[in-house]
Image (cartoon, rainbow, N blue to C red; front, side, top):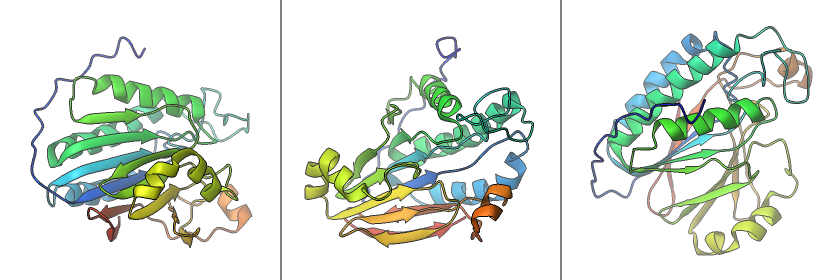
Length: 252
């Protein structure tokens, strides 16, 4: 399927001097074939922010649990049976949503980076979808990709270190893990932040010079979130940076 995906025609990058950076952390979208309309207003507001001015780089984090299920039997990767889900329509929604974002990014940023982190619901579907996106934009010169199955990811936006992981593993050892794997980047950065999801609720925590941003989701509350007592602020967010610090958080 991936090798037969016809890559889109590349768009000529527009390079503008800028010290603005943007992170779009897309965690826990749980697309299920009936989700796009719920997120349409948020998508519109994300596009307005992307198009507000030119960015040096925009990082799109595909943070895991993009799809609600991991197979046509409507189960998660661990076999948990969920409500019947049309996997074909699910992937159609994911393509429509994320390709719309990427199309806006490559017009309004010198560089786009797409980073994939596997979730607990959809590691197989999510990974294959990331591969399809990479193939679709393989002709686009100002996109870089980090879609390996490595659990902990990191990159630099100017002098800001940005880490990402789904949030279902290693939560008691984030600082030690990132110092071990990304020590040089963390040492040279002037600002250090880690994006996580998984729990469908917002939380910020200083891990000792390394700020964890656990982001919420607009996914409607379900039995699982009811059972664990989540009363979430239903939102997506974007975070803007200067060359060396956090500038703004936009709730969409």
